[in-house]
Image (cartoon, rainbow, N blue to C red; front, side, top):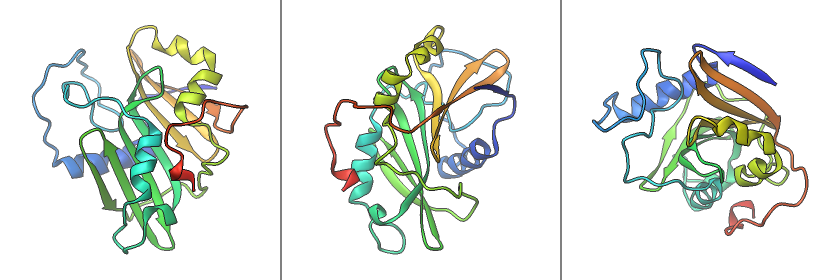
Length: 202
């Protein structure tokens, strides 16, 4: 299923506002591979940040497992309602992962990349449906199963971003017309290679 988004979905806009609030709306100088007069979508581009390297969602979830939220509870006690990876390579590794979590009335954003991690209180809307990690394909497995995704890498080394919402993957690709989004089922389609770190699902 394909759709073109010229101004981004409400979720992308919400997390764009969040990210620029965290970053103080300051973008450090750095060589960019492409320029555009169009508005940017989603999180701030990782281009120009050569010191960062791609990390897996499993790594982010593993770090989340031992992190505490503002209420003192481990984030592993929260339910996950949103996952976003930006600048995603063919193995499903991303430069940055953002995970939206909820426990009771407490909502937080967990940010993770190869250099740092942070937990930010969140008061705005989240998707209602939680993400069941036991039945959801990890990005590396998802990319292996959905072979036609390789076609989305024709022009770019990385995919702009991926999102997991409920039982759905949203694959967002930068095009000359804006952001093209393709949606796929996130439910496991069969055996996949075991991740190196499994404790995030315990």
